[in-house]
Length: 129
Image 1 (tube, one colour):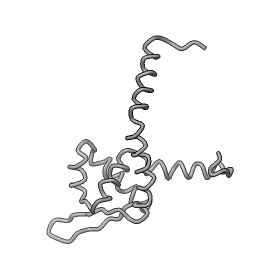
Image 2 (tube, rainbow, N blue to C red; image 1 turned 135 degrees about the vertical axis):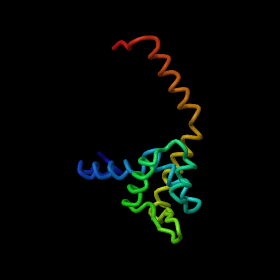
Image 3 (cartoon, rainbow, N blue to C red; image 1 turned 60 degrees about the vertical axis):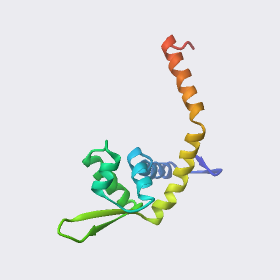
């Protein structure tokens, strides 16, 4: 693989893939975007996202915390609450994510047209060649 004109060894490619795998899934992106404006508690995140299971959200938050993208603070009180916030590393990771989101918004019509053309071709029958 080449990156910036340089050959990158395969073990480095695997490491990059591992790192991007954590922050590139839909739940991680959604959590990080929500945390970009202010800290959130677990229950508030779960209510806001709606369709995510407790297990998946817990796993996502642990992975993001382990990699340093978010921080976790236990809030004092009768009922223990945990608050999550984006770290500087997380804020830095959001920059390219925002660029990809802008790309998706601006090129949405082209992507939808390509999907429709692909689906139409598949409905017409198997490809020859």
